[in-house]
Length: 147
Image (tube, rainbow, N blue to C red; front, side):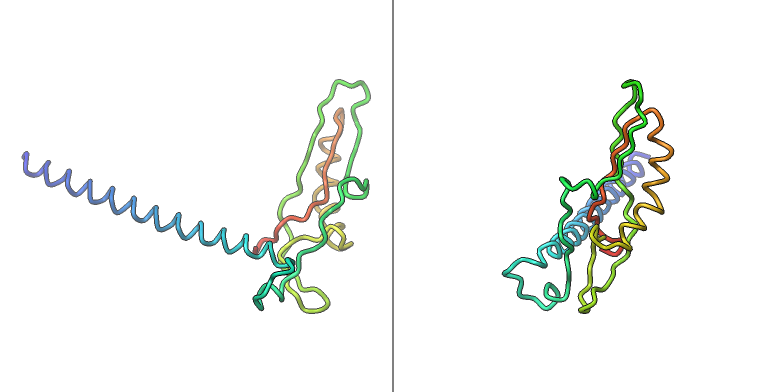
């Protein structure tokens, strides 16, 4: 019986070690993937040299001092409500610019993207959450589903 238990313990230890190795490999793959995603964020740098970086496009950053970059609703008539800050979901898919570059970001300056953000989500959430509260939602340059 002791040998069986001893043998079982050694099998459990081997299983734990295999699990630990598998988790390290999965973590390494995830880190490499995130590093590759981060690399695409530098596509518009002056020093970009690779063909991949030259073939990608990063839209202009939003100007959050511009009221057009915000959806706001003030339903707090008696100053007892909350300030609601809402961030739209990631919804956009990769798209191609007129000059053939791939973009992995929603473009807040693109009227089609803004319309989708607003009509498909933000206006519905604002209608639900702004009653009795102050609602704020920025149009922002989020990554696409494929990024």
